[in-house]
Length: 317
Ligand code: ADP
Image (cartoon, rainbow, N blue to C red; front, side):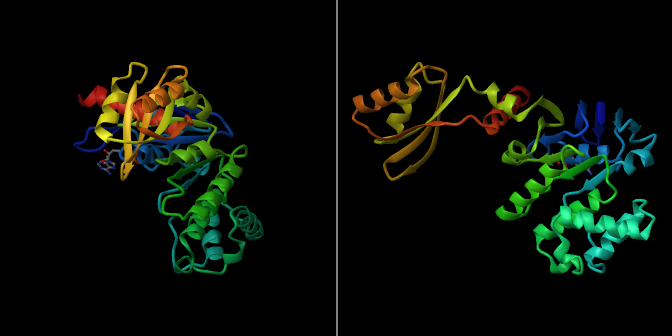
């Protein structure tokens, strides 16, 4: 449904905001576009929506080139930018009616029926007569989603859709996004890892304008599965404990996390079998108080941090 081929974008007097991006998004997929701030997510979203042309390379949406066949491509896209474009002069119903007309829903009856449909799908039926300034941020975001899908686009592009929402609103918005998959192809840009884990079928990790990895969230998590992470809480002299942990051959990484008086928490990385038992023996043998020893679950965050940190080391050093 979406094809991106060797796309590069350079802003005036700038290094490349994105470099040589290539990927494909099959129909019905929810793709997470994940990267830290400044990675090039918004730049990519803007090129996908035809809002901006690539400096080089090519993007096609449903087979239409986003530059040469811009109108055709745009007709197939619904876009929710970081801040939804709402007008306080129009109540939600009038606004959706306006957007619907703009997007080619000419028949008034049809448009009204469609407004009722998207209002229900986005849980905004109860606020159709209100103006945006009377709505919470969660509701405004859902009105933004409703305007993005009103013309039943093949492709929905969402830029940081849950930013600034409270936890309940975030949960609802994610549920809503998930319900859009299958019928629509969705690209979701975010810097929030759990968002990808909860909503996306595939994920692209981007940093400094380049793709670092592309896979299913499950496969990406499995990549770090060989590495065990253990949280250790121990009572005793912090510097000595840390030095001892680092001196152990079976330990690959020691990260000091926090202290509560003399009780310290470390995150240990190891590839060795039986690392927990060994750590317990080491602590007890030195008469340090062992309070907790827990295996931390592998997560997308581990993979993300590994990839981004490796790259930082590789390019900045
Ligand atoms: P993200 O959305 O991942 O935070 P952006 O796509 O906004 O990243 O930015 C990627 C890079 O391009 C950053 O280095 C940013 O400073 C630069 N950039 C973004 N927009 C502009 C612009 N309009 N003019 C110049 N540089 C820009």
